[in-house]
Every structure is written in C-alpha cells, then in structure tokens.
Image (cartoon, rainbow, N blue to C red; front, side, top):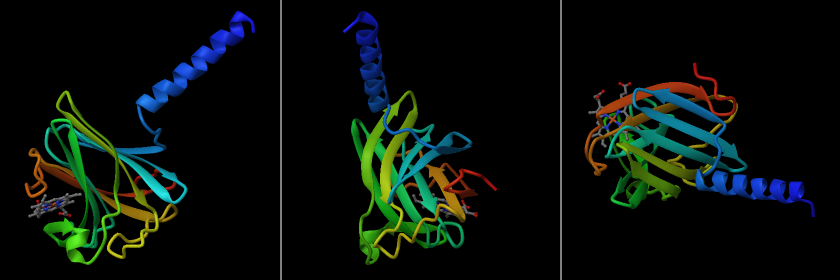
Length: 176
Ligand code: HEM
C-alpha cells in the first residue's frame, strides 16, 4: 500500500471518529431567541437535538391544539453529568405531565445530554408513528406546529423563562 492510500484511510477513519463524537447529523434546524431545535427523519424515527442558553431544562413540543394543550412534549435537563429526558403530554393549555400518568407510555430515548458554557444540549429519538395515542403521529409532508421552551432550573415543574411556537414542514424544514 502506498503512502497516499494509507493517508486517505487515516483521514477517512479520523472523519468517522469526528462525526461519531459530534453525534448524528441533522437535516433541518429552527432557531429562536437562545434556543434551537435540529432534526432528521430517519426511517421510523425522528432524531432531535434541542439546545438552549440555560443551565436548566429545555423542551420541544409537537402539535398543540392551543398553547401547550395536546402537545407531545419532550423535556430534559442535565444535572451535573446526569441527563434526564421525559415524554410529556400537554393535558391543558398551561400544564403538562408524564404520558405514563395519563394512560400513555414513555416513548423517548435519550441519545446524549451536555451542559457546557451555559448551554444545555440534549439529543433524543422519538417514533414517527408512536403506538401511544397521546404522542400523535408526526408527518413529514404536512404542517407541524412546534413549541420550543426553556427554563432556568433543573426541574420540569419550573415554568419557562422563554417559550415560542412556529409552524414547520418536518420533511423539508420550511418554516411558515
Ligand atoms: C414546566 C412547566 C410549565 C409551566 C408551569 C408552563 C406554564 C405556562 C403558562 C401559565 C402559560 C400561559 C401564559 C404564557 O403565555 O406564558 C404557558 C404558555 C406557553 N407554554 Fe408553557 N409551561 C410549562 C412548560 C412548557 C413547555 C415544556 C413548553 C414547550 C415545549 C411550553 C410552551 C408554551 C407555549 C408555546 C406557550 C404559549 C402559547 C401561546 O400563547 O400561544 N411550556 N405555559
């Protein structure tokens, strides 16, 4: 094997290592004030990354009927090195709690959680077509209302410091 081939193999292995260290690549991203949400639809899963300028919780919700009501909410925080993530449902316009407390199931998988330099970033996966009726079905080719929020404490009972909502197409990333 000549030295060029060896160098090419070395670079390829290095690049694979770098991309693994930085987690999944995402296809789309929306940003609001001090908070962002990136995602990718991968087969029957949505890979999500939520990031906010906070040492407290960060959350994304899908398809509320009004404010937080009926939204499939994914909320998490990093306490020290320990990341927590929860699958919640907006049971009213101004409140949410665990799907499991409302007859549903926990359907979020934590991928990673990091709190660094005043930013909290959490990666997760959720099913596109969850078996839990509280989650609803995500669509890649019609409008999805996203709600994004963060709080300044590692407690999912603490209200948001900031919240916003927007309408996106999860398939194309277009924001309305
Ligand atoms: C942690 C506990 C939470 C509490 C106690 C709480 C409480 C409230 C209350 C009282 C309101 C109405 C007043 C206002 O507009 O600020 C509200 C609105 C809102 N919340 Fe929450 N919230 C919580 C978590 C969340 C989460 C996790 C999200 C997003 C994933 C979220 C998204 C929103 C949005 C988008 C609105 C405003 C909707 C609108 O006016 O159209 N909230 N929340």
